[in-house]
Image 1: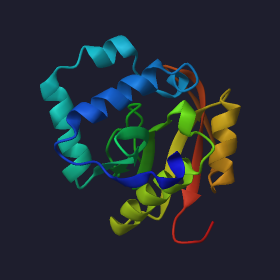
Image 2 (image 1 turned 60 degrees about the horizontal axis):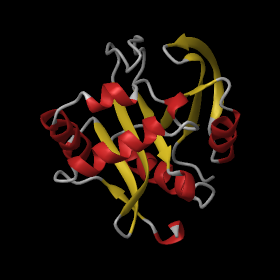
Image 3 (image 1 turned 180 degrees about the horizontal axis):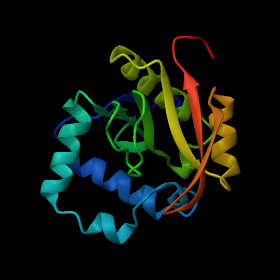
Image 4 (image 1 turned 45 degrees about the vertical axis):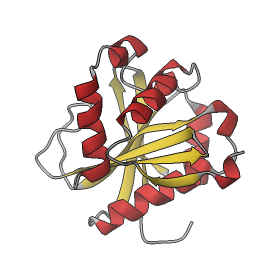
Length: 181
């Protein structure tokens, strides 16, 4: 099913699909641990908020969302946010040096294990590199062994930074860009 999925940046008019995939992600018991919002919080957003999110993800210079679409079914997503020194990140931490943060990683259960994470991260990495990034950074829950292993497999390594967030203990991982995996 998913080996033929198209991986691409979202399009401006796809706000409803973006919304529906996000709802699936925060509803999935295996994935919900990674998201900083709940299904109720996502449901509370109105259509204008989803349209604005789509615009930023599709057209933004400092953010992009990449999706895997198999026919008419959206089966995966990764977003990347470019940060500059002096900003605050999505967890309100000070950004000390420019970086590209990977957030919102989700692969639908039926599509897991088919290489979509690799393809989505490759798309995010290419976009981030085009915008001057030399690495991707992400945070992963310390107890999410499956996600940590998947990220290690594709080239992310722990940075040694550990912290508490609203979802509990997390570790930071980084993958240098420009090399081969």
